[in-house]
Image 1 (tube, rainbow, N blue to C red):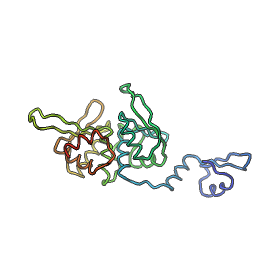
Image 2 (cartoon, rainbow, N blue to C red):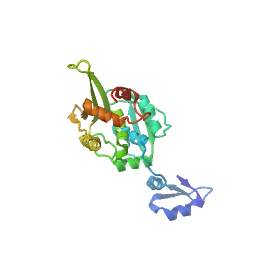
Image 3 (tube, one colour):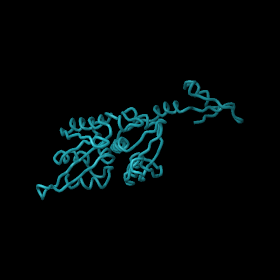
Image 4 (spheres, helix red, strand yellow):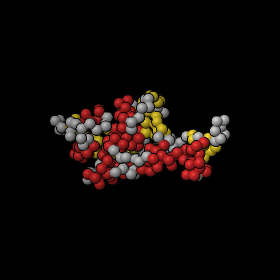
Length: 247
């Protein structure tokens, strides 16, 4: 950010000298450049973080399929579902274009959106996210009244809703809702928070590379009613279409 001569005295008075550089110019005695640490302080003062259903859902998606760059500013959200990325962009009012990214595990291409937001980055670090979070993320500071919006984002990111025809009772359908994370701490926090809020427990199992928190049919129905508590919520359509058969 550049300030011209008439603004420099006010800046010098208000901000620490270590955050200010001076560059001589032809038309003005000095041009002042404010460095990123100062921008972060300024943004914190000017903006207020507002929790909404859309924000909580987007944070759920970032927690599962997103990435925080070590630069303290940039995000990457990747998904095989381009509709999910469009929904994510809508929740955060992003206009960035959707690109493609090659998976290091499968070699296949997926969709991605990249964007920068210093203020949002700072807030997500405050609630418990960090760069290279996959195996170390734990509990997050999500408001209870928006937890199931966050959980819907987690479900659309790295979760699943599965149905099977019961091999014993031919007219019955089995239902399982699953949340997956490479961090056991995070899965335990999900389980504990769900138990506290709606009194269902589920069970945790380790798979090849991650941990699964799974709920069987009776508890899944209770959980899905909380996740899809009203119409027109941001969500992945193919998953809510399965859920509608049970709620």
